[in-house]
Length: 160
Image (tube, rainbow, N blue to C red):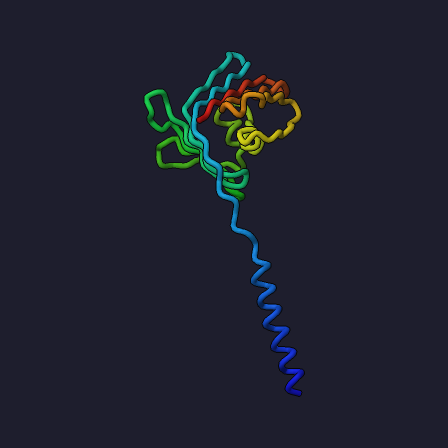
């Protein structure tokens, strides 16, 4: 009887120790980049958007701050698994179902932010309709062109 109880106690302690070893690793820290972005759209009329940016996050959640030529924050974009929000500094963040819908509304073209995060890290992320040049990624430069669907878009990022 005592041996049976001792064995059960041992198994309970062993199971507890194994469960402690099976805890998930801590989440990967969010990557951070800052630099300059330029987006050109071959729309009618053609459009060009440029800003200084600070980007921190993952594909699941993050924040992108855009600054004008004099350093004032022009906009802040936040995203999470529950949606995306655009704050133009008026204290009224506009909600969107996801980041693709937000970027399409903001600049007229859906920018694949998940892919951009991979590209910044030097990882290929093929997307239909996009051509990406990662050859200068180690020097902090990236060019991605969206050929389809229209309008064509040319995204250039420089970071430090």
